[in-house]
Image (tube, rainbow over all chains, first blue to last red; front, side):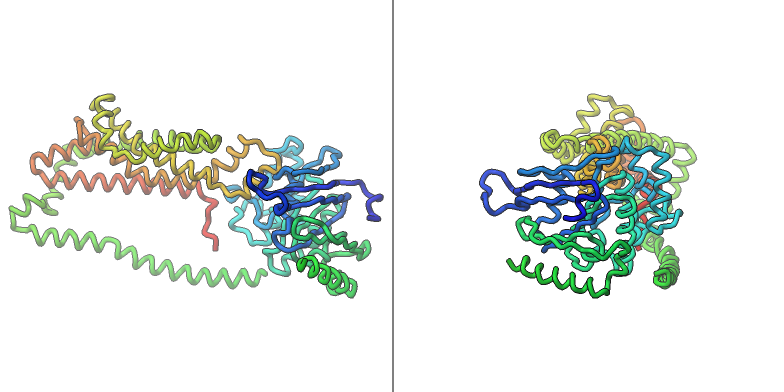
Length: 264
Length: 273
């Protein structure tokens, strides 16, 4: 973890475990969803976790987001400059269909004392630009948007709360290839520019290699097995790195390890 | 991408105009069953006083309608029934929606309340009518209470179902951003249950009319039910049928009003083409 010293820590997880179904009669050895997991993430970093479905990837995100309570271990978010919240972006967006896009985005000042109405207004315009969305989208309802637009608005909805850490659960997997490429680039740029941190859970190796700084493989039972450092240099963008020799090599390496992990 | 949008739009437009053309045909077909019915009725009863006594006839119904309209009797009685039904309907829907949504707050209270609500929903309103009339008199109040009792259970059940079937992704989102329970209720549960509440309203229009009508039927001094009971006692079938037609007209008009309210409130629910 060479980059750890350079930028401040956002999240550290120590010996985290989580057991499903701890009720009476549950067998004690079979239900580990997460076991002795440690992980830390720094500002400006994107970390991807790859694994078969049901291996505990989403459980990890739910634990970090405090939707679940750990059985043991510690999850620590480093607070600074008042922004300590987590943004959680799901594959199925959480846009309220009865509110317009603007109504959805203005939930932040309604729900959070840290976000003023004026700054929210400004941020909406700024984010619409970042994600290449027109201003007139504000008055549309979610049902009037395409899949890619919805996912962009959904990301903005989370960003409106000004979170330091973004959790993404297969956010781009329902999109068509070109929309996905573009959204990955926009997202990568945003995390780097605004010095946020992100954990991306996916089963798409290409996506993980294209946008992350580090990739982990997760085994069934919630153990992180391999860590891959991905370094395409400072000028990387997810669109440019695809198709390069290095990309292919990293892909191959991860794929062969992943086959072992899934096979175990 | 924009090219794709254009072709699908124009395809949609052409299929849309086809739909419009077939709609126009459909509109012409709507009155056909009614015309057939009236013709058959006329043919079977014309020149046959015995049948006219039992079944009345289109001509007699028409003249009864004119007579009752001219004397103001029809509109006065219909007005009473409408006021009773609407007051009971509003009371039942508002109370029911309030109780049903509030039950979202406590699973325990919801579980305890369930058998009582089921009891209220299943007991025939006819069985309650005599008690309600003894308690609230033979005036308008007892009919409003009967309309209220026949609508409140549906409103409770529907709005509670609505509150419980809020999609988990919205609740999860609210939890992640640290919303309080009352914020979740106000910003998610209430708006997303609206569609269920409106469905309850659609069901309840008929039930409210039924409640008011049963009250009038048993004991009253005015209202369509009263008018019809009195007329059937005198074998005045034409007046009874005018009463039935008036009830149908009221029910259809009130349903149309609810449809308008629905369109206004659920503007966001566009066809997802």
